[in-house]
Image (cartoon, rainbow, N blue to C red; front, side):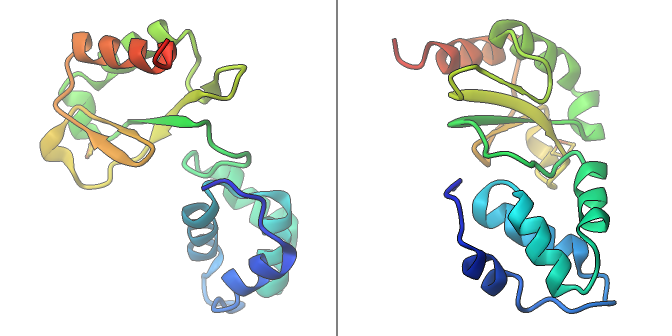
Length: 158
Ligand code: FES
């Protein structure tokens, strides 16, 4: 979901978190899981709730590559950068998909229909190498399957 939340919704969403208890990361994860990204107002709501500065919260957002600061594309591809996926050929999957989509990692199409970014291992390594399409595992990929999938995503059913 990528709807713009109101200030009140953001306050309610992070109301359970408390200052000085290491709650910055859990609060950020909750916002991203709910809205698909972490907006500037969300950073401010978390900072207020945790009695800290927006700069500190933003620092955590920018340090971890799995946090996003803008709404996800319609079809968001997360490429697993974990060790099992890379051992199983994940880098070749990434290269093939990027070449087909003509996107850098972290990029998205001009029409906002698709994007690709780095994801972290989520424990489903038995299906390595894999990507997630809008959060759904697409595993046991080969280079040819990855290219076919990227073509479909890029073509958008044309
Ligand atoms: S390394 Fe990719 S899912 Fe674990």
